[in-house]
Every structure is written in C-alpha cells, then in structure tokens.
Image (cartoon, rainbow, N blue to C red; front, side, top):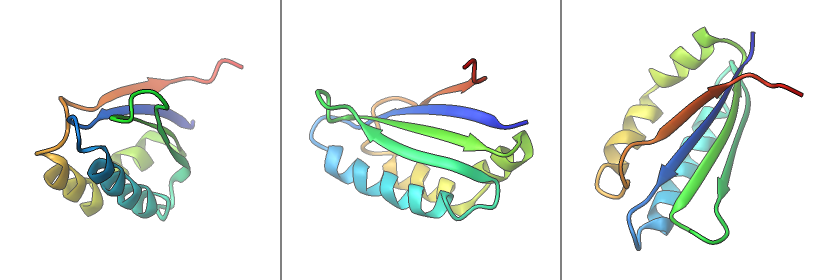
Length: 96
C-alpha cells in the first residue's frame, strides 16, 4: 500500500533561502530512491519561511528506508540552526 506523506517545515526568519537550498538537495537525493513515487516541494506564497513536501512512497518499508538515508541525517544536521521547531508530518490516505 502506498504511503502519502505531507511534511511541513519552517525556517527561522531570514533563513528561507538557505532552507530552500537544503530542501532542494534533499529533494534531489530522495527522488533517486527506488520506493519514491512522488516527492514535491512547495513554498508558501505569503510566508516564504514555510515549506511543504507532498510525498508518495511505495510502502512503509520504503519510507522507513528513506528515513534512514544519509541525506536525511545530513539535512537534519545542516538545518539545525535555521529550522523553526520540528517538522510536522501527516501520514494520510487518499480519499478521492
């Protein structure tokens, strides 16, 4: 069963460009993963510090493998000083 995931990430004020760069690196590496079906990044039009990933993974196992990748660890380390709080994750089921 596919896993649909929405991740919301905020940068601290004035760090939206740096965060966007880190997120784009994360996107590039994540899209290379075998279990990745969709991995899209959005930026809020009004609040440029707010980023949203819409992801689809082939399975929970694929998502678990994604979360164990070096590029995830690298993002966590590199974004520690510019992330505003923790990422908010929603695992959802497609209704229609």
